[in-house]
Length: 196
Ligand code: SAH
Ligand code: MG
Image 1 (spheres, helix red, strand yellow):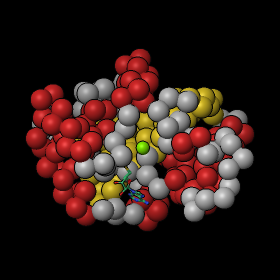
Image 2 (image 1 turned 180 degrees about the horizontal axis):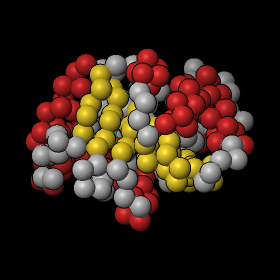
Image 3 (image 1 turned 135 degrees about the vertical axis):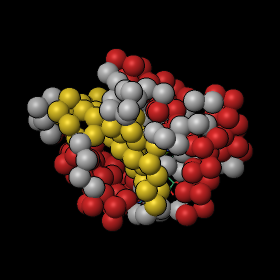
Image 4 (image 1 turned 180 degrees about the vertical axis):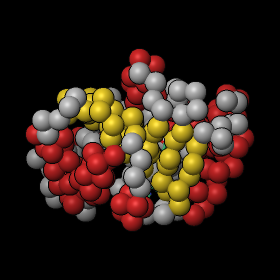
């Protein structure tokens, strides 16, 4: 991969306020991926491809990433970025709404990164669990949503997102096939490993 291009892609995304993964969050995920290199990664929420490009470093040889993005202009930019970063052979960008795309997928994934509309996290979880390989890990970003999720906060235009994030975390924690950690890193990162 071309690290110089990656730095430029990150810089531009930050300048344009595209919500790319935070450095601390990325470090936590990368440390996990180093221990256990995935063959197949599913990402929900590509934006301009920054996190997918970062994750591609940790794939097994011949590993692949499928990543879903619904905004056409972002898909175009992400395609350009993965070429410039020289990882376009490892990343497959799927254009469309993940709510419609996910039910059409049938992969077995070793890792899923959920990083799209917060109100849809319970649905994304259901679909991710269907496709998660034994021993696979789900990472979900922004699960504490600026602290709203764990406070008594409920008077906000984002209250549906907060309610659905709470539901998502409760489902993770009550699922006996998962070993779940909720990390306060960044905007909150859920880490759930499929143990059976
Ligand atoms: N993972 C990226 C950042 C993703 S930002 C990174 O760290 O570099 C979230 C992205 O998800 C946005 O680009 C948004 O357009 C997209 N998104 C939100 N809801 C979606 C949905 N239902 N289906 C597909 N993409 C969605
Ligand atoms: Mg995010």
